[in-house]
Image (cartoon, rainbow, N blue to C red; front, side, top):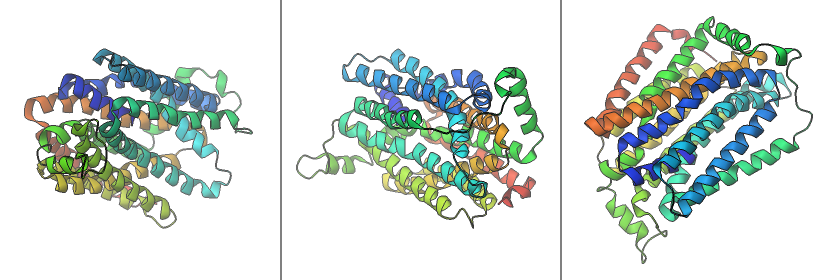
Length: 398
């Protein structure tokens, strides 16, 4: 929700696709130095403490952004600065949260299902947040989206404070030197071919396929906006409309992101409901190929309705790819290493996605959003085909 509302706000303030890439890149700056360190930290000290710090930080920056937007004093540099703070908090939060969730599972026989369910829900939320933000911005403006996002952290913070009898980190880990601890994690990953292949799939997809999300305001406004005008007129008309539109220009974005979210929900429930029988490697491969393939079709589409339908399939395949890659990485990782391994996953996904957003923003200003998305999606598809052929063992993972 936060990211999409920020993108809409920045695009409204600047009108530049390059600015969308810049705000994506700014979140990367703290991510690189903090991700591996936070993963090491999560393996050595209480994960609950790490999560409390990160969740409170994200609440405060969202609240500040809401106030600035509501008062009409927000400037682009405000958004950039708070995006930096949010990136730092996310770098701390992601590896600790994923490792912490698994610690709460009592029976190890349920671990595989718990990891799959957690990954599916995490990726579903990642898609539903922008969808909710798009509709909220259209109906009430960006400030409300930031405020509601701030409120969502309260329940998590209260729950963390009230948790008792939590697992403790292994004895002695807290005193181990940070660099040595991080090096152990990197050494472990480098010796595991499956983890290396899964990490490369996540990184390439994040850099080449995921940047479409950065350019969604451009697609909704400039590429598909005229084709969506009848929908806007119907839904925002005071006599026949279905909603009150404070920012009707944001409505096409909200609708497109909603269809993307629906596809993600279907994918998440599909994965979560078939954890016992699902051949994860096969569906990971399907998602890894389907995600960029449908993105190519989306880049070619000039129909608002067709684009919305394609986003259903994009959302489904995105969750299959990312949730299952996440699941398989956690299953293949010992408990004592999980924080560090998932910090690399976070760095690969978040870092490469933000770098991809930067290149997509500048390429979009140069050659247009459809070409910028279409070309990189084709390259991502080619790499997915290469991995499927070169590493058939990935398809056989259970």
